[in-house]
Structure formats: structure tokens, C-alpha cells
Amino acid sequence: MRKILTTIATGVMALGALGATAPAAQARADAYPCGPQWWHSGQQVYVQTCPDWSPNNSIPVYEYNDHTSRVVGYIYAPGDDWYVCDWTGTQLTAHGATNYWWALTVADNGAAGWVNEIYFRGGGDNEPDATLRLCPFYSARSADTADRVSGADALKAVTANAR
Image (cartoon, rainbow, N blue to C red; front, side, top):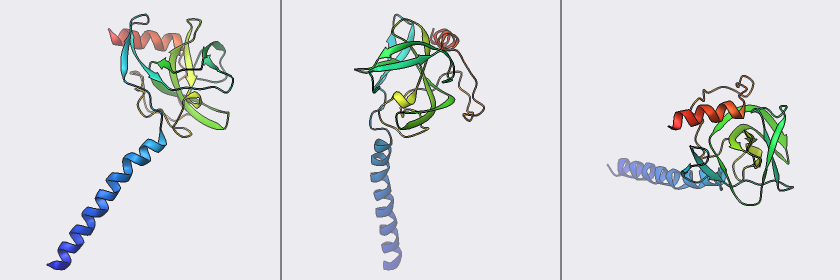
């Protein structure tokens, strides 16, 4: 009986230790997750404010979730910016990071498009932001088979879904 109780106690302590380290490990994985959703009345859609950055304070916004598509505008990077949702696309490697997750947003010039999540603070390579919601039209696919979607079409789809 004593041996059984010792085994149970050891198991409980091990589970407790796992539970205590899981949130810490997750927090290390994305130390700067996006904030809660809020209604953007100008865009008529729910968005989230996300900590982003750029080495030159200018984040490119691409027409498609594809780094070979044209840049439709930029976001001035100092300070956090709002994003609608994430979705997969082509893999971009730059500034010591690599990611195939893209965030839907609107550039400072008003053009809808996609920002690669290498420009998000926290997280690891090829990981989405821990709290930015998935785009409602999202279907799980690998980066190799991800659909190419224009930011304008994606924003229309999300806005229609928000009403």
C-alpha cells in the first residue's frame, strides 16, 4: 500500500511539474501575443492589436499571402498595429526569421493586404501568433499548397462574415 501511495504521489508531482512548465514554455514560444479582439468601425470588422517590428520601421504589405506578389503599401512599424486574422501562404525568410504565416491588414495608404509574421514580435519560425484568430475561410494546408488570396478579397470575405 505504501508503495502504491508513493507511486501515486510521484505521478501527481510529475503532472504538477508538467502543468507548471507548460504555460511557461508556451509563453516563451510567443512572449508577445496579439491582444483581444476589438471592433474597427472604419473597416467594419473585428481586429486585434499585435506587437510588430521592422529593422527600418517600415513593414511591407503584400497584395497576396505570397512574398513574390507586389507590395501594395507599408505600415509604419513603431508601436503596435492592428491585424484581422492569420492564414498560411508562401514562406518568407528575412531578418533572421522564416515564416509561412501571414496576417491580413490594411496598409497606411488604405490598401488591403498581407504581412508576413516574421514582422511579429515573439513566436518561433513557421508558427502563427499565439492569439491572432485564424481567418474564417481558413482550411489547414501546408505552405506548399496554401491558397493564394488577395488581401482585398480576404478583407471583403471577413467583413461580410462579421456582419
